[in-house]
Image (tube, rainbow, N blue to C red; front, side):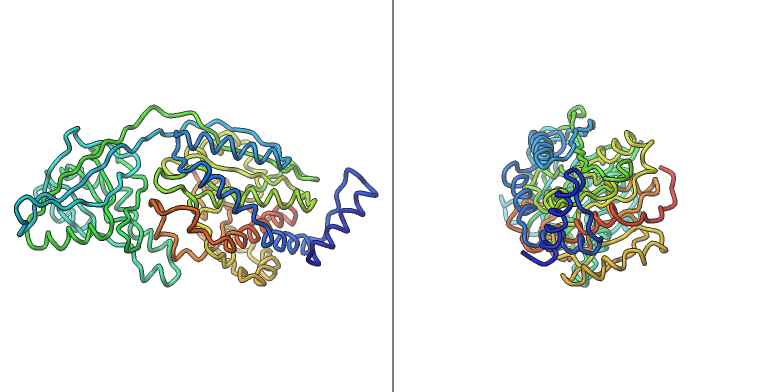
Length: 476
């Protein structure tokens, strides 16, 4: 047994002899070290990720997989001895259906040939007509080019946004920025095209890789604009169309059959490890339980839920009861609506002033270099001792964030709650993000354990140490 674990065991035994109902409270630095060592030696987070990804599979909101995952996580947290409950959430219930696309005309096409395309319908998309549609494809680089063409150049066509995920930016360590440069065309592109009369919208996948894997994700339809079907093409197929269209007209046959059903009943899983002195004060540690219906959602975000569960599991195992309550949340519906985050903020509105901090892991399980902190600048020195300890496992960077650090904890940040997320090496994350390749084999068990070490130590620090200053509250 490592020295920190030996010391904690001795302290716990001594306390048990003197006060059977009062566990020892070791110095903060010793508890932090013990949590890091225990996390690195444990496969608990791996086993929980496997239970969700392999044992259940995809967990799109409203699906049987999502319902099974809710029950599994709640039962496991109760088994650990936490006070677990299911908090109701109404969630979108969208089903993908069939999806087919093929090029049926292009310059120099030999008689009778077609070229099949790899694509995924975007979450929330409407269907094409039952028989599908055939129309010319119009590649555009950006919205400025779309607007220059105007209705005369766009009406009756399928718009293809060719903006690429910036792989150079990604390899330089700015994966989130690379994603942000491409994802707007997925989210808002359909309505921008529909406003000019397009009959469908496609986007080059908001991700990178060379395996002809399309990346799905949600779209957002603008009020007062016709809803048109939308899908993401693999990067290779988007580039193919761009090359062919430079030579002359390209026509595409598209058939998408998604359905939007009435909103479904679901739940956030919420479980508390009650604080020993200030149980009314809460530190949230979380991941989102839903996933897209492609792959098995291992990185996005079974790994985040598993690490949140492990933080509580380690504290229970080591006999650590922090001053404040540690609250594990498995959010529902991050991917296509954030209904779980909104429902929690509304249900707990009167208590958000007593939420001391919130952590969310939702950028995959790459090697953590430290953590991101959405806190007032004066709070940064308070995090320095933990950063120094985590430097021992290569995770000592604390990055100050002026923006949000997690979608589900965004409503809490608006209420003034400091927010945190692991700062991970995300260079490979957007290769599999929202694709059929998001499966358990892509997770490095050591990196997952490192994330558990970072976030368990961070969660205990926030629940045990001095409270951080709050963020300025902003309008909802």
